[in-house]
Figure 1 (cartoon, helix red, strand yellow):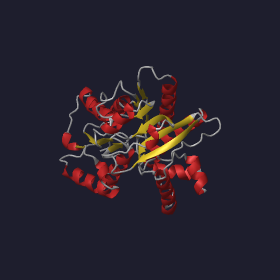
Figure 2 (cartoon, helix red, strand yellow):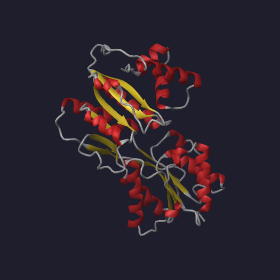
Figure 3 (spheres, one colour):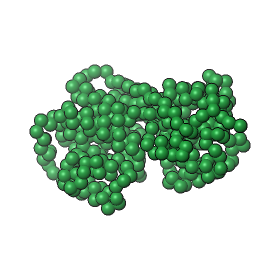
Amino acid sequence: MKRKLTIKEIAAELQLSRNTVSKVLSGKSGVSEKTTKLVLDYIGAADDTSSSAAPAKLPFQKGSIMFTYHLENTEYLNNLLAGIERTLKKNGYALVLNIVRDGDDSDITIPPSLYDGSIAGIISFNIFNVPYWEEIIALDIPSVFVDTFANSYLFSGRTDIVATENANSVHEIMDILIKQGRKNFGFVGYTDYCFSIAQRWHAFRDALTLSHLPYHPENCITEDLTRFSVEECISYIKERLTAMERLPDAFLCVNDLHAIELSSALKELNYKIPDQVSVVGFDNLSEAARQFPSITTVDAHSEYLGRQAAHKVLNRIKNPSLPYEFTQYQTDIILRESTRPITN
């Protein structure tokens, strides 16, 4: 079976800081290629090690919670992971990591340790694969999913789900943009990726309807842009912008990464932000604040979301018979330089 590893154990074995190991596991920048390979090779070797005995618990440790997630190069994951780890540690639980890499989504292997009784609970993030969810739920291990499918009813009432509440912030930022004189809107991002993004999309459409403004599908880039590299994505967005009969004077993006890519494309086409077009992202990544101009965003409170996911699984361990919950947490707008009243 797979050996369960904590960030602390990996750091101690490789004589690295826990922060460095955490950066590697979350795909965050700032770690050399050599160190990244060292950590990933060590985890891979541990995964291939078989043992019939469950690892001994640390003193005062109640058990292990597995965090299984799709690897992304984003600080959002790092913040989420930090919230989970702190909360579990305070409550006497160790954190075990299981990474699902690109290309694994169609055939996700369930870690063997989930079948031997050594895992007390499971937190899953950014894995939108129906067979995986079915298998995890069938294990009858206390489990929590961070976000869910665009069709939110698919697993509601069968497991605990925590997610951000997105509609209110989208309506608020749309109202701000409209009051600033924006009337022609575009949208960027794959709308069916998950519940949170689908909610942002539907709120965008609803806000247009409530404000009696037209919806222009030709101004919305709603394909899965994650299939591109950053450079390819910017090039593709430039092609789409050039093909638009009239450029929108405001874009709402599903996340900050796409907002940054859109901003780069607009600037390469010599459009002025925000004089000619406003750009809004989502998630409050630090990179969005470092852009020129800095990008207005919505804070998804990812560290808090991690803490609440951890509390949710701990509560499920203590109270396994309680009704399942679908919990959403507020998001907050952060206004920056990429949005201001339109100028002629």
